[in-house]
Image (cartoon, rainbow, N blue to C red; front, top):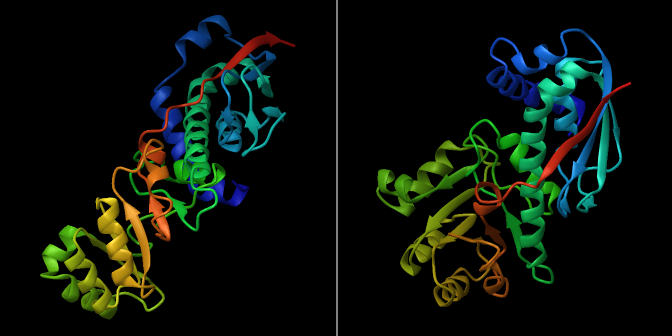
Length: 283
């Protein structure tokens, strides 16, 4: 994540996380380290996976003290092993202690998402299907979690509600029909915006094609129904499969022929990676 993106988009969330963790002072740290003392600590990986979020991890300490120095041994996207030294952080020991939990929370979460995404994406190798995330992200952590998906080998669906037109069941219900909803979207949205329509039945698929949808989501359909839907669409729109897609069942979907498979599990169900800061010592 580059410095401009960090300062414009990430810093405010990192500061909020620090303010949540340090409302007035870090009592424990101030008790054992009342004055400045320079020190260093190691960042150690405690399980195999894909590392993601190193810049975010480091930025937490830099926001507390811009003089903090970090010697990275790996970079985002690298495969890491249990016991591997990932970085050494040097600076004010009070900063290293106070920023530890927030920094690790981001790094563990992002690395867990990257690792899980990488596992799921590997199951689609050899197919024409692209793996997408969703908006099912932790509030105020979307920028970090969607970045982690990319590091893990997945791709991002729309970032937020301003990013594209997605007509889901309740939009269609509010408009009255798929046909009306697509017509209204084409009249309202800029012509550069693609229009995606969520469908649950073959009848809805037919209506979406005839209405001129650019992307048709096949939501919670069984495999046979999805195959029939793709035949109906016949290349007239891009196709997306969605609905409770996980590492355990995605292999069954890769040969159906959809253009995209979206999985909320990439961000809402990925376990964290176990990473620790160890060997703190004054220097």
